[in-house]
Image (cartoon, rainbow, N blue to C red; front, side, top):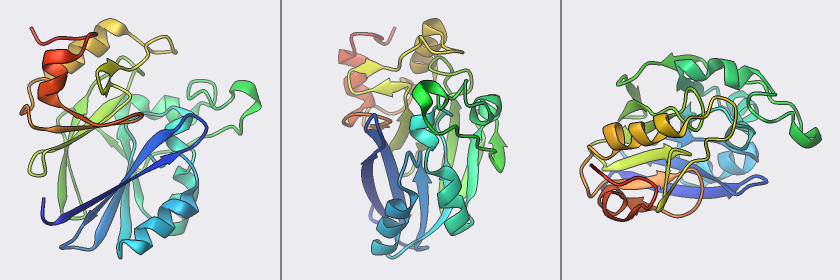
Length: 213
């Protein structure tokens, strides 16, 4: 990963991980889940000496998309999301931003992706892995060459995402983790939407919610 610089910002009311991934060769940056404080994200990108070219969303809940519109306006970056998540992004009730008097958020993605699609941005090749269960259109982004998995709220460090929100399904969540994520190399870093990092091998052996079969 000599050509990669990765910074994590913890943002928003529920401490969401926002990842800023710079390709040192192209000096371009991809932001995964700009949860809040778009100006801080942009300032960090500039400190890294890069230009934001793309925004990737693992799912549409308010705590992962709060900074999207401002960051897009500031940078002109394209926004990617999974196709089945389009309705969640646009609906403040489905994305939970309408709860408790929060600012209602509506986001329209520029590109809606399909399962196993490859996103070519900033000199990186992200593989889209459809992992519903936390939401109906949740997904993860896998960088094979760099050994990185951005798992959103699907897979956490020795835990998994909640499934009690609209569109949630524990059965689908666990199936996606076993079928899509546990098939990745065991030394792949798992970079989740909340909390600390782990590796696929650790999760297969030790995650109490879903073991490899």
